[in-house]
Image (cartoon, rainbow, N blue to C red; front, side, top):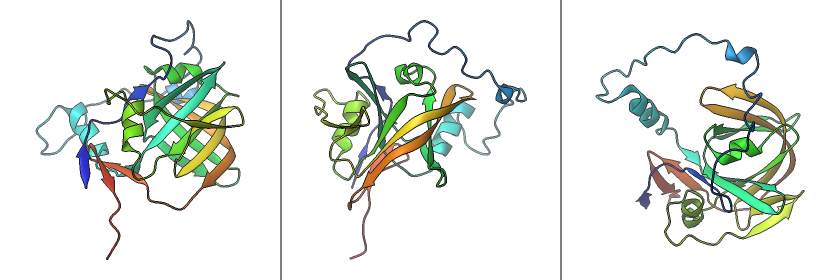
Length: 203
């Protein structure tokens, strides 16, 4: 069973607007900025704009669906994302990649915390809410751990404290030291080729 949807995008529960002045200052001021000039991508026999072909190619990598959250004051901010990965077991590290044009990118900094909620089968409506796709979005409910909101009912939860930020082209990378992790039995919500997918277990 699949439901065709556009790729997940950022959703802000409370705020509408841009970055606070200077929110992105300092991101990218490192040796990682010294990279060769960009060259056109060879897209083989794909008849498409190289940028579109590149995005389509990346979409062939099946991922889970996460909701990233943080809290500023009493306000909760979140976004749907699949750019999440594990980095290390000792120490426990994870990484998220955020478009520099998103509000959440301007909210995170070294020392701040973010939550990762791995969505379960049946939570595609929550993903749509956080991606601003649903007209009548599902009202999210949260549990709070280490002052960080996490989506209630998710398959897995992590809370990570940002220990490093890195320049990543039009994205910023936030390396987080995991302070809390839990999971439960269940099936994940998957994303591949612009669609949600569900695991189909052998009969």
